[in-house]
Image 1: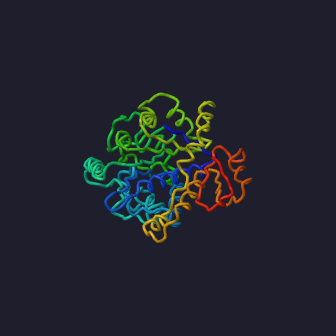
Image 2: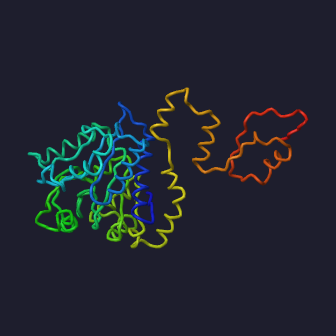
Length: 343
């Protein structure tokens, strides 16, 4: 399990977006190999979606060969209602990127047979090869998707009655009117989420600090469904400083001490434009240039000794002036025979 702690919401959103970007690029999706991405709704992922849209517009990322599966949808809310999750996803994400409509999957809360709709959703996930990365958010009571406290930790996609805490929390999206908030929803199960090859959970704000504490510092409990991901082999929690207020100081210090390593997970890879360049041999970079690019990517000191044309400089290069972590690139050079250079 990884816990990523950033100072502010905007930084947490950017880290999460970079992680998604890198996972898609590393997967190298294509017509016969789609990347399957599970997605949440709500206010928490909006910042992440904005950054992903930015990466797409900059030519750094494409969603043409990405299939998405959303976590949940309200029951009885018209598809075109401004607060339906269909509307949310299209307004905040899908219409701004190059994803094909047929590759987006959102549960239908108005289906004539709701459980049949849920069963079909599970089958669609299986047909797509399972979820590579499921991104989620949580409520203050630790529910993920609409798996409310008391939900089975091996549950599948199904109809759920919403807890009063969830209805109160979501009332802000319905002008504060509790009577307008749906009381039921379709949701993927905890077991469905656990089947994903990787899970990333976004947790921001002091109002979710106790839920984060329950998620990582206490045991697994069906009363805090997010705690189930302690048992997932690849879970990444991404949070801001406010969300850590209930954690022990030593827990925060421990995970902050790992940030230097964890930040390597979101180092820039290469853009779609550069991938296209790789397909054209005439425009490929020389081997030496590729090497120097890799060194700069990982912030390694670099020294090109082909420019050292005197013995004094050569011996300096071999001595203590070169950091031990340096990588020295040896390019073939013609040297006068009178120079006797020893290794």
